[in-house]
Image 1 (cartoon, rainbow, N blue to C red):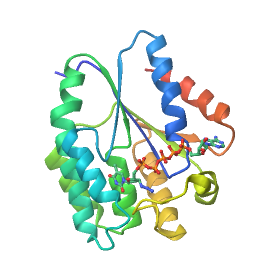
Image 2 (cartoon, rainbow, N blue to C red):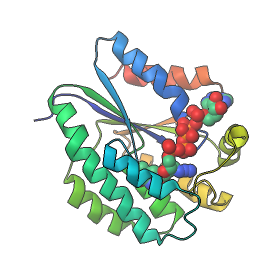
Image 3 (tube, rainbow, N blue to C red):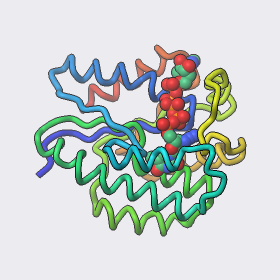
Image 4 (tube, rainbow, N blue to C red):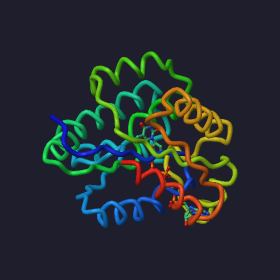
Length: 205
Ligand code: Z5A
């Protein structure tokens, strides 16, 4: 029986997830909620090893199906070894990315069949879905310009702008498909503007 809330945060790169996560953790803690921060791909010892495989820019070739399966292999560990036990103990779990990213990047970006992703989702998660997803939305060019100075790119960041435009479109389309769960947040303005929208949404929890 799940007792805690499961919140996920997602979006294209440079949308400001990492920036906003600190605020979200502090804000929930100020309400007396015990929050555990985690991330995907990763979140467990094995999951972090899979993350390294997935994001290593030295890996020149990886079949898109392999990429999808590795994302879900890491997620299977994450959900069973970490997320479910924490929720059952009553903690609030905040995950930096989750299954919506597989639909956006592997479905939208790579062009994999969404039904194939849905089959894996149903196998690994059954009908488990986040209580709330904060989707930070920013035009791709703007997001990319924000992260330009970061230096070396990971394997997925090396993709071209068309790839990331498809990713963004898939995220937006999912937010329309699941409007109750996925809260679309305009992250194109200041950090404070984004934070304010998130605060209003968190107050609904
Ligand atoms: N991936 C996948 O393909 N399939 C899956 O199923 C899953 C993941 C789960 C790793 O994700 C990769 O895995 C990711 C998707 C894929 N690949 N890509 N590309 P990640 O989350 O670890 O990596 P990331 O996308 O690069 O996230 P990030 O670097 O943490 O992005 P961010 O959180 O949006 O960035 P940020 O550090 O908060 O902000 C970037 C800069 O912008 C920084 O300098 C901030 O100060 C600045 N910023 C933030 N907000 C603003 C505003 N509002 N105005 C101005 N400047 C701002």
